[in-house]
Image (cartoon, rainbow, N blue to C red; front, top):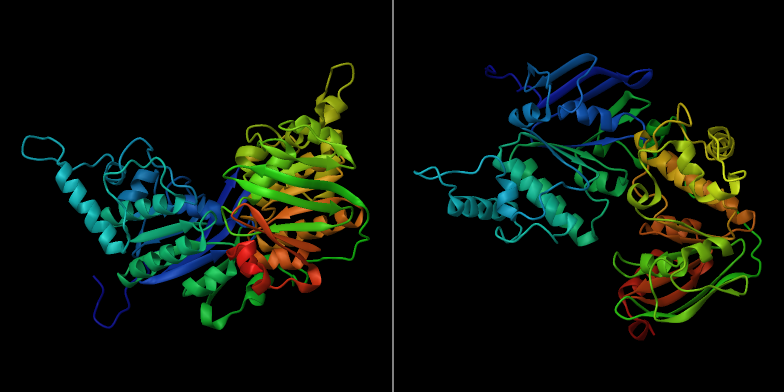
Length: 506
């Protein structure tokens, strides 16, 4: 029992946590202190050890060394169930709910209340779920199926489940990556209400604007070790970046002048009812053209249609004057188009395959000799791009699914750059990767443009759009509402075009 005048122990405290996976050392000094009634940010580059530390807290991994205290008492979780029973809940970027069950059934899965005859008391479940959502200040029908709910609503359901279990510590791991601005605001309102109830919240994000608007304290990790903890009001973005990467990142957007050449990609009158309308644009050699706009505006659908994945009812796509056939990605690849998709894990990589296999996947036929492709041939080609893109891996035969998000993105880029494309389409190239790796990706894009590559960059991050693009094409409800040259592009001009139709903007 805490004596009078003595401060209560922190909700959770880890000191000098170490963890290795064979020869790979993931953590050397994982140190973190969470106070009740506080929102605490955990930041660091991909590979800094954040995920490993969270998995130890959640009971998925067990530490090799160090001290783990929960409300002042030593703990050592050997399972996720043990961590949950102790009051720890993790809200992941992509929740894992049962889609065919109702919202209420997901909240009370495995612990449904029963009546006098041992039957599940569905009325009690419904009423408690409704009370949980009212407490969180959100409106979700407890009886509707989970299938079809937005990621934002699914995260709220996970939070409601955690509250129903009386979780004392909530960990939010990149919770806003797939959310719109309105959904982020709602999530933050919920997080603040939980903080005000006295719960401890750990918030993991690469977005500094979110860290500074939501959190009270921030801890920085680098290379598997604790670096520093600061009150938000006592630090700055520049200071945190220096601590994260061990150096100043003064050129997050290292855009260098490139010689803009002739038209390489020409898109004219592209239409697909209900998706995009009368889309026309050109991209020239050496030019980075950004497709900007709000989530759901149709940017990715346009890119996928140009590459031949998605259909279009009318219009033309030409590369170097050559007319491309509809719905033929192989024709687009043969003409020199490469597409780095938004969802690298689901659409860009085979996670169980090696780095070398993934990096050479698009050129396997070209690499083979008389129909045979050896591991040596794969490795020789992959080694060139892994070195050029500075992919951090112990070996080329490492499963790509074990790499950090930033290094996975580099492998996807390596796969497509190995095809020697004329047009590179990159969809959200730096989503979910740390600030240091962002600078590396931006440097690479600028370098490729300088070599004459025509680049289409789809990005939801305005600083990235303004920092890297030679021209900004703004998409609103499936239409291009503005074509803004770099010298005239501002946050205001882009957002105005992103929220107004061409008629309104005129």
